[in-house]
Length: 337
Image 1 (cartoon, rainbow, N blue to C red):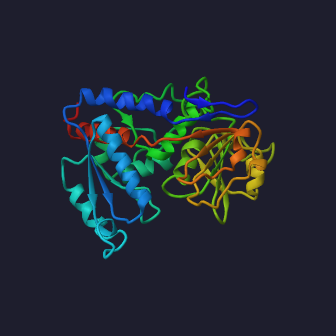
Image 2: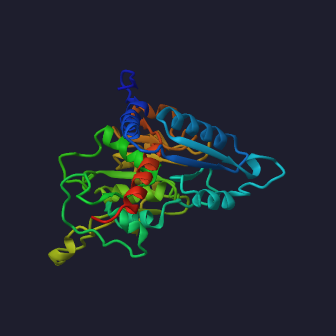
Image 3: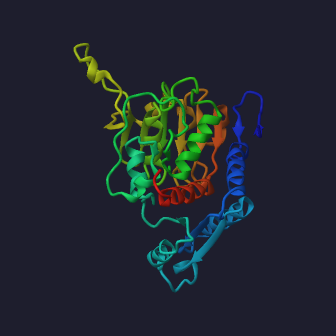
């Protein structure tokens, strides 16, 4: 494990050993793939970090064997053009190209997760497995039952639903540091954990809160003007409540919280911060001793002395999702058995 230790301080975990497993998985799948998946990246901003990220993605895809095509438009071409100009046309062009398996807008111009509507629905309704053919239907999948799943392997005839890459990467980091308890049933392995996620964006914060709470955690979702609690656990106010209402919800519910950020952090086993601001810092003195901290933002959201706690960083396994998208497209087009 690539880590740096100093006596009396927590571990600083690098993302590379976590990502290596998934890179190897992608390479093994590509080795038997009849056609290399094609990912189109759209860059339409003058932002230097966005361009650097696009180049990083291109390099990562090349190392894995994924065909990455960067479409440059708008302000990325000339300062005379507007930020985001030409994005819609580029999306339409790529979407009509049957050789394209995935589209990635390098810098979002609206706070929207660009998931297929079915995957978006599944994410927030705790639907983990789908039949590929269902992607061609306008009917929403059936809601999940309360029956515990044996494992994370899809039942026969189904595949895993696509999950946003950054929230998924964070979950994989938490699995790596054993925040998830593999002894528990799949779908409830974060049971007993309290997690604070700072910044409720549609791209990272909100889907991450849904994922973690659907895995059994109690999640505090913190945004600039409110704090919400995400949980599958029912609220029990008295002993007269019937047993039926004590059962777990099949998916998370969202409730307003009266707690302050400091109160949330004081009891959190995990803190995830994704605030895109140099000035924003999570106060180390507010953190629970021994907590796991993940910095997801491009800026450092934690103070310099945070290594009195445990700090882990994350990587983004985008090519993993693109490969799945290609496989699902091929499966949905195949004749029904």
